[in-house]
View (tube, rainbow, N blue to C red):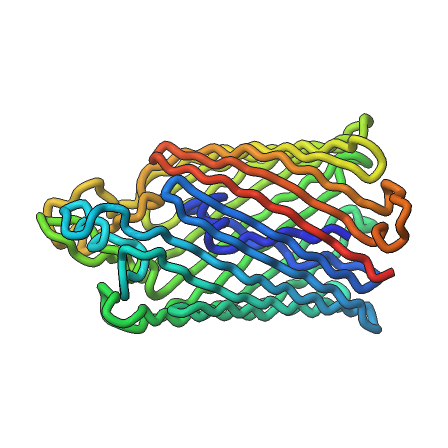
Length: 381
C-alpha cells in the first residue's frame, strides 16, 4: 500500500497558485488495515520553512465499507524582520507583513496547524468530514462522492460535492480589517474515466467552486495613494476549471501521465497548466518518478503593481503576487522502495515501503521553493 500524498495550503499555493489544486484523497482502499506516514520539508526564497508530518490509516469493515483517517501536523516558521530596528526597511517590512506581527516582529513567528480528515466509503458512495485548526483559523468541510461503472466496467463516471465553512479570527492588534470574519465554499465536480486500450486510460473532468467571504490576507497592507492601507479582495468568487489526463503504460515497465488544466474565474484570472509524470520500474520493488509542471496565468482585474489612490481599483487592493501575471515551473524526482518486493531478510522489515522525493519550484516573480518529502508505509499483515 502506498499512501496517497495530500497537498494542503502551503503546498497548494506552490503547485497551482491562483488556480488552486485539488487535495489528494485519503489512504487508498485495501483489504487489510494499513498505516502510512509522510514527512515533508519546505523552504522558499523568503526563508519561510514548513515541517509537516502526516499519518494515514485505512480500516476495512464489513459490508464493503472502509474507514480512512488522515492526520497532519504542520509547523510553519516565518523569519523575523532582518532590517535594523528603527530603519525605514524595518518599518516597511512590518507594515506590509503578510503574517501576524504581535509581540516582537524581530523574532521568528511560529504557527502550528493540525488537520483531520475522516472518510467513510461503502460501495460506490463515500462521505468525508475535514477539520483544520490553527491559532487564528478554523476550517471545516463536509462532502460526498458517488460513482458508477458502465460498459463492463471500462468507463466510470463520478460526482462529488462539498461545503466548507471557515472562521477567521486574526490575532489581537494585528487585524488590518474588521475583526473576526468567515468564508464559505461550495464545490462540485464531475469526472469521467475510460479505458481506451489495455495500456491506455483517459480521464476528463470539470469543477466549480463558489466562494463567499474573506479572501484576502487579514494582516497584509498595500502601498496605495502614498500610504499603507489594508489589503481588500472581493468577497465573492466563482472559480471554474476543466482538465484532461492521459495515462499510458509502456512495455519497458514504465508509464507516462500527461495532463492539461484550463482555469478561469470572475476576478479576471485565466490559467493554463501542463504536467507530465514519468514512472519507471528500476527492478522488482524499486521504482522512480520524474515530474515537470508548467503554469501560466493572467492577472486579476483589480491587481496593480502600484495604486494611485487608496481606493485601489473599484475599492479593491492586493499585495499578493499570485493575483499578478505569473508563469512558473516545477521539476521533481522521487524514489519508491517496497521492502517486501525487494525480499529483505527480516520478515518485520518486509512490511515497510519507503518513499523519497525532491521538487524544485520557481516563477517569474522572483519566488522559488524546495520541497523534500520522505514517507514510510506499514502493512499489518
